[in-house]
Image (cartoon, rainbow, N blue to C red):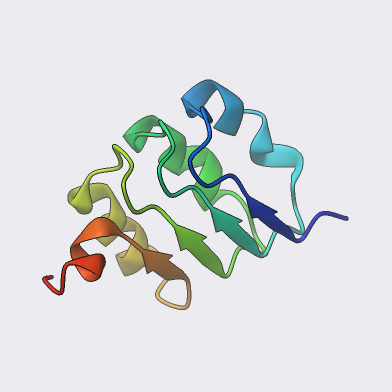
Length: 87
């Protein structure tokens, strides 16, 4: 089963992420530099084994990331503001 997936700087978008719901054992996902947005958060939240996700340089809003963190505080989410040293 697929546990780690690196899609850094690809044309991955929300339509691609919509197909991810069956990746039940995915633990680490790098979406940095992709075309994903807040529309993908619902599918990503449904991945039960996910432990780490990189959403830096995407169109996922800081608000969506904060909401997700509030509901699943064990998940490590890397986002652009962290890369620039701000919160």
